Length: 230
Image (cartoon, rainbow, N blue to C red; front, side, top):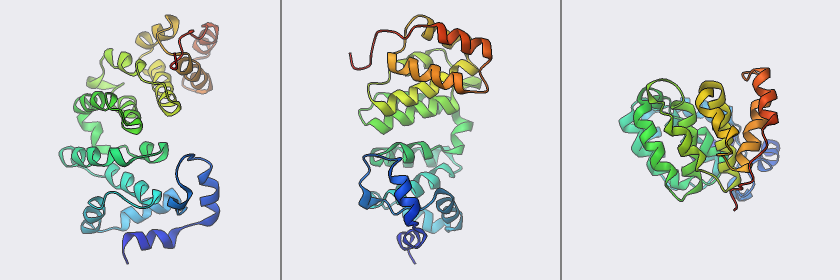
């Protein structure tokens, strides 16, 4: 039984109906409705030969296949082997869920190289390649040797589309927690777009990791007039 047949057997009609509401813009006919835990279990059950064959089958027909692709890439161990496959896959991503599922564990050990690759992603026109770049900077480059203050400025220049604004807001929420001295001036000086500022403050105020006094102070800062649509 090939991978597509195994996914078809795992399809859940009720979950499909629910999940379609979370991924607007994805063609309904491309969604089988396989739950993420089932996809992860399938990935673990595949032989190395099956994994390599599947990763070479781009483009896929179904959303669920793309989700499995992200899960498989996230589990790869070697950075040098993983990065080319990530680059190959990024242009095929057409939704936030598959994009956010792609987070290779091996990137954590090569964070400086990941930072440089993420910068490249930010320069691309493809929406979800840019979002992936922001996600990488948030996950791997706000800590340790990979961190540079310039990372904040790079992400501040991203936006203009809902899924990019949301990614940038998550980034700046985490930056307030991990790099508060560097991140706070972006809010105080109006260096973010109105959309990112508002969403980041909301996320920070909802976070248990942000001190109460900082939450109160953030609420006093007026959103900048500059919009990403301006």
